[in-house]
Image (cartoon, rainbow, N blue to C red):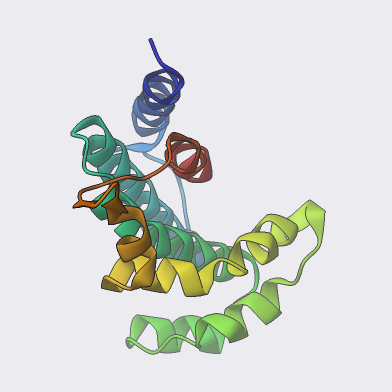
Length: 164
């Protein structure tokens, strides 16, 4: 079994375990926690989509989901730990601060997960390209005079690990 299949199997097993621990769990939560958990669950579902697409040998659409995975995780963390009650009210009304404001609120401390977020925020221009059909896909589809998916296995493994 090649390395990408091993990583996909690990990610799938992790996702199945996490779903079994969180789906339909009856816990007492408050508004803040309920909002954050619903966004985190969306992140988990997006990650499942990435795994399914990679199993189906569709790396381009899988990479297109890296940005929504990252941004939903950032929003969930912000809602859980950093949003004021007024910001939560606004979020419920459909108004969320821009991603840069969320990143600033979270900061870059390793203990909060902010360091991981700050590191990955540097990939936002590439995530944008990958989500909206930019040059990042073009570069990975031109190979040996052909137009075909040619995403390096190391990048696909990084995507799987990013989701976990």
